[in-house]
Length: 350
Image (cartoon, rainbow, N blue to C red):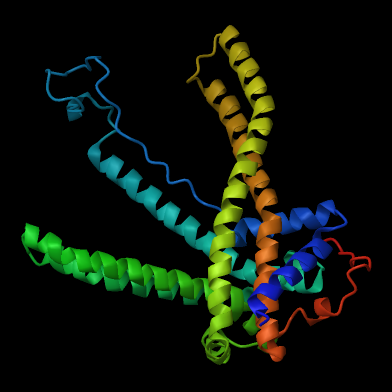
């Protein structure tokens, strides 16, 4: 018995190779930029711990517990109210940035499909053309996440605001809630993945909205349940393996890239120190901070470039499976009859 979800792997591999080879720097750069938004770039969840007692005595310290700094000893602007305002501002900026990034990511999903289907990888023109579909996809995903958080947040809010004592019995009753939350977020992740992989190309193929595209593709899921179930399993396993490979390759390459930055940074530090500028002086912070920012941008570019072939392969994988289960949704039919020995099509610059 031939499995479409397995056959699509070979088709995706061949199509990925035909898109990326022969090497074209402009095409690779545009695909890497798209992959930065649509790929699974993990965000570092770095948390900053509280510094311990250093043994120094602050002015006005009467020997209290470490960290008990009298308010009177703080500068005029460093009040608890100002810190609260600053923290709130940082949270708002982070939320706005995340929403903006998510919106661009939603539009880029359509730009990505357009590029891999036509092999003419562009960004500016298709981005403007797909703004409407991207906005609808963004609203759909935000709505799903909001509903999921609401379903989990209502019971928690009921406990916190209802004056219920946090006894051992309450914590025992919370165990089913935790399991329900895990199940809910698993279902949410699955729905979001299926939306990206199959609903987005359906929206392009039939010019439908998100909900109507889900209604269009849902019967295909039911008719080919075993194929899509196998797809989810294969994609999950390959995703883990690819993630490990990308992580190792990125770490090794970043070590190489970090060498010239470390040399320049060390020389710059010695030069600034010799000139009498402290490490926390304005000049030092600007120069060393700029160098650090440049390394951070380089690291992002390297990560996006390394993961781009994998992201492209998975995009083709879903397109080939969708097309093999429903001919009217086949956006890559031209690749099925393409002569593998022929020269790949070229791509015009964006």
